[in-house]
Image (cartoon, rainbow, N blue to C red; front, side):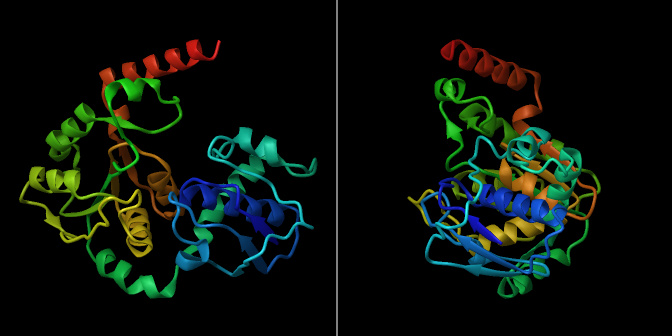
Length: 286
């Protein structure tokens, strides 16, 4: 099977959507695929290859350096790849495959994603802790002024300064009483420190130290990203500032029922702000 990701200029989780969809689709076509060839390019949104970070259970995955122009590959992008029945209808070219069944298989395929062996010892070091809550703080490309927040497209997860400050001030109220250990998955240092400072001392922070490449869009390494993703997928509770693809991917990978809290959807005034965004977007496109 050949998968062309070269048109995806967005983050790593968008690439996972296309890869998992293709696997699910070929599986339902009853094709016995054992080898997957992936053509992709690094960019500022995704400065690493799929094959650098993940493997796929029971498949041999190869990163190829040259595009195969003889094979037609589907073209997903951040706007047409939502994990939904609508996306299945767009890319399902077989009348023999039911879209509901395809969606179910697509979600199930995320269970096949595994971290590279070199990352497993670090991930397991954190998974030994019980009653674990993961706090996901995604800021680098999400933090906007309130005006830019209102002008952003409605389906993009962004946050403005008042929201993130209120998140830090209210973090203890959101944490389940059963929680004893906290893992912080963050992509920058400033608000990570604010969250750390706000957390009640009764919680044990199991990853207090983290290093960031300041000035870059992606301030964390590929190893940190994969560690965050799989620790998040094994936690009991995920509390996220903005939501987005990373918590969604973690929920799909997970084999357990998890509680998920998205802060930007937690309060009535935030929901009103999102409604205003939709109205502005509608008026701008009349």
